[in-house]
Image 1 (cartoon, helix red, strand yellow):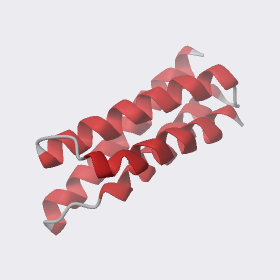
Image 2 (spheres, helix red, strand yellow):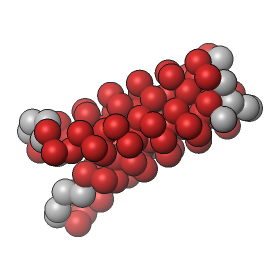
Image 3 (cartoon, rainbow, N blue to C red):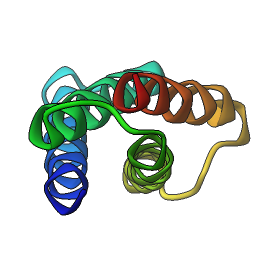
Length: 100
């Protein structure tokens, strides 16, 4: 499971980089890109673990949630409450991918 958690962190870092690069290059904020962080987190966790596991899904969801909140805070300087939808969807997508 250690490799799966490492993959989740790697996927989250990649997603954070993509989301922040989009913000820096395009000049506007698009919070729903947080779903991409969830997709990358879950996919990389599953790929590194070479399969799915329920516990890995929970860990991936937590990592994706923290990554999206941190990225939104980095972009806005605070956490916009309206973006809670992006955070919830990101965590659920990461769970579904990594756990399946």
